[in-house]
Picture 1: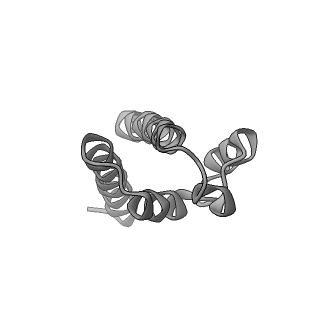
Picture 2: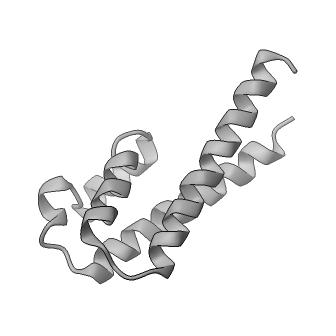
Length: 93
């Protein structure tokens, strides 16, 4: 494997892990501290998610007072974005 192929495989694996982490969270009981940990992991690690943060006015300071529904919806939107990113990565040659 070339270094480019190794990097791509790593990125695909990381995306799958991130998607699974969010899926596990969404299918379980709501845990605000776990939600905050997941959101921190993705907060400003990607330009598109950073824009969503600003548009939705979600940040670390507001997470402690947001409703579980809004936080779950936000995590779901990140999951959709990551799924799209994974699909594009898998289609690359």
